[in-house]
Image 1: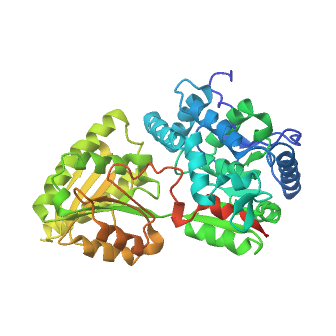
Image 2: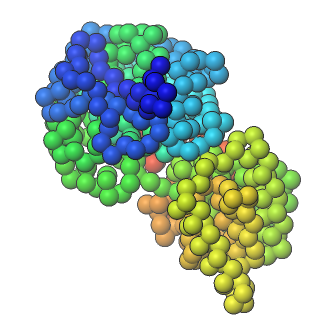
Amino acid sequence: MPPPGADPPAIRVDRAPRGIPDEADPVRLPGDEATPAVAAHPLDPRRVGRIAAALRDAADRGLRGRPVAGIAAVLDRVSRRWLDLAEPARRATVADVAARLGWSEASVGWSLDREMETSLGADLLGALDEDLSPAAALDGWVEAGDRRRRALGPGLVAGVCSGNVPGLPHLTVMRSLLVKAPVLVKVSRDEPVMLGRYVDTLREEDPELADCVAVQAWRGGDREVEGALLEEADFLVAYGGREALEDLARRTPPRVRALWHGHRAGACLVAREAVGDPGLALALAEDACAHEQEACLCPAWVFVEGGGADVSRLAEGVDAALAEIGRERPPPRRSTSDVAARRAFLDRLLVEEIAGSEAILGTRAGPGLSHLVVARRGLPAPPAAPRGRVVDLHAVPRLEEAVAWLGRRPSELQGVALAAGPGGSPALAEALARAGVTRICPPGRMGVPDMRWRHDGRPCLGDMVRWCEEVR
């Protein structure tokens, strides 16, 4: 134990295949002032090359010849261990991530559960079958009429992760291993802790498979290290903001295929016949609390077909539902700047209301501005609502107007929750698909997609493989 008053030791977040020695003591990551602090082995282009070579060797020895069902079975065991509340790695991760992000431990645990519940063996094999049709093509040649086909994964996958959703980085590892590719992942400075511990669990279950995964940490934008990684990679999976991804794309060699996952937003549409649904308010609140509204599948806007009275009643129910969820999953600590931004947003709405604006129907706030519910008439206009347990309701005469508004920003769109009453609305679903939406679901389920969802509208596993066919 450290002496009284001393800082606790930093958490080691990087992992390398066996046989790659540390050449220096781990150092605290540059620019990391969070608690708990994190450390990693210093990285330079030469070490990147050694790790990449070790990953390729490990894949040749213990990955490429395995049946894909066996790989999925190992990943299934790891996911089930992380679903166990008593699992030491999970417990430590929940506490450390909560301390770094300012989330409650209950919210971190909720996010980890949602990620792991959709990462079980049946989910993995189902996603492979849908994207590759069939997954058996990864194990050998499959017959296809007058020819046979073979699917092959990349020689090496490079991953660049974001830290806004606890548990999400493991998705890049799972997808890479499922297509029988080794992977080197850069973790986010915001949340670098979970993935290394996930790989530790994988190593306990299957050391040979764990040797096909490396987790590293460095300051984003390090040209030398990232240049070495891009030279080694055959495929890139990158999460991040627009500017960061555009910069990375400019430096990525043309031969490297890539999946780019930028920041996007979701919305909710409530048809007139669904406004009175007794479960609607709780479902909208659940979507706004999922992953603390940080994910691309959380609603930035809620469009309600009807008049101001309908929206005001719904706002009252959502406010009560947010308070109810907050008792089970307490909201994050709000930073001074966050509280100031929320106060400025509410003050501007109040000024508009005093000035006689008919657009403002009312606002509600939780203690300490822990949550916000805003009710307005018409399509979104400044000021834009902040994020983080915020429900921004807009009364519109017809949902088609909301769909048209969303369609003018297709690059921002991801998922939409659609409450359309019994039978749904095929016409609205078609219009949303054409507007750029990649996933439509009922309210309350926005934050829990399964492995078969095609993230950003792409067959992510299918994009990672290349095909060879032999015509007879």
